[in-house]
Structures are given as structure tokens and as C-alpha cells.
Image (cartoon, rainbow, N blue to C red; front, side):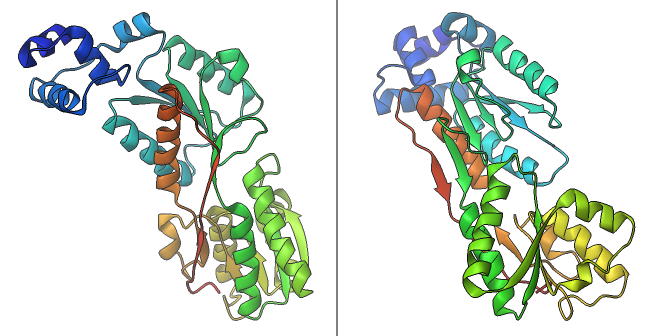
Length: 314
């Protein structure tokens, strides 16, 4: 196995210099860092993460918490984190919490046992940074006094409402996502701002109520509206499926708009108009923010832009 000592001998510098260059800890000139990285690649150097963690109390491992890995939104986000991490000689451990506080706590223990360099969390039930003592970046979730990165959910909600109005909808149903997540709440607030300003009739309903309506095939409620704002694309897929299955024409009678622009959205029938948020880029930037924190840099919360993707459902 190639060691730091082998790398140092190969390029004629000290072991300490090689360590600084690989770990971005302390000074190493750009030229030396380039030579070290080239030698590491050429000699197929693999860092000993256990030894690194014992020496520094931090490994080059990042813990990633997500609420539901089966939701297509999260694998794309994780891919963004993973690609950025691997480019910088980091690895990730994924914790799927299923919205379960006990599972979340167990994954936090695992992250701690592996001396993770920090945590990127898309599900955060409480402020635990003081407990685990590691840097945290919240992704698409906002908690007071924590650094976060999210899409512009308020703008997304405004775009949803504005588009339906422009397409002729004047009785609009807004379906709420889980209210314990700031992203869903902001989308509703943004849409309400436009609907109230334009004097458009609307109602809001929790997804659990809609789920029961769809399960029992009671569509009278849905057809009382000619525009439906969905909290994400997955909810919109289900709405579209039920409407089309019962012969209710979309968009002629009911227009449906989603949020996320998942890869499937262009292939469902009819193709889904939605709000695109940069899911992959959110993950990649979350890692870069965490890395900067670990290097002693100053990091502030960020909001990324969203845009309307027009398709046949409206």
C-alpha cells in the first residue's frame, strides 16, 4: 500500500508537506500541491481514513441525512453532493431517516463514530449542532441560526400561481406539503401572495385530505377547480393519473402544475408543467459550503434561483 512517505520520496518533499497538500490544511504552494496530486493519482494512493480520523478527530467523510431515499428528488441531490465530494477526496455516508426521530439519532451516532467532517441534512428535526459538535449545512430546509442552502421557494410559488392565472384558471386549489418543512410553506405563501393580489378564488388543502379523496375516487371536489397547484411533482403525477383515468381532460378542464422538474415530468401524460429547482447543483454547492467551513472560511446561507418549465398539463 502506498503511504504518505512513499509520495514524499517520489516527489522529493517532506511527509508534512504531502499531508498539507492532500488535506488542504496549512500552506502548500499550488505547484507542490499539483505535483502531490499527480503523484497520488499515478501511484494509486489511497488515504487511510481511520488513521486520519484518529490523528485529526475528523475524517474525509461527510454524513448526508435525507427523509426518503425513494423520492426521486433525493438521489439527484445526493449525486450532486457525492460528485463534489469525490472531486475533493471526500466520501459520503447516507442516512435515510424515513421521518423517524429515532433513526435520525442513530445515524447521527454513526456519523459521530466515523468522525465525519460534517453533515449535510435535508431533514432536521431540531438544533443538534451543539450536541454533535460538527459543522452542519441544511439543504432545502431552513432552521433559525443554522446555515442553509435552498431554492427560492417563494418565487416558485409565485410562478405557479401566475402561470395558472395567465392560462385562464380562476378557481385554484393549492395542495399543501408537509408543514414542518419551510420549503413547502414558502411555496404556499408565494402562491397566496399572487392569488390575493389578483383577486383569484382559491382554497388550500393538506395532501393527506387529497390522498383520501383520490383513494376513494371522489373527484367532485377536484373538478370544482380549473387549476391545481401541487407541492411537488410526485403529488402532481398522482393528480394527473386520476384525472386522466376518469376522462377529465387536462388541461382543457383542469390545469395542473408541479414543483421540482424531476426527470419523469417530461414523460408523464400529459407532460407536466412545473417549477425547476437546481437539485444537483444544490447538493454540489452544499458540499462546497461544508468544505469551506471545515477550512475555517466564512459561509452564509444561500438561495438558488428557480424557473418555470411549460409543458402540456397547463
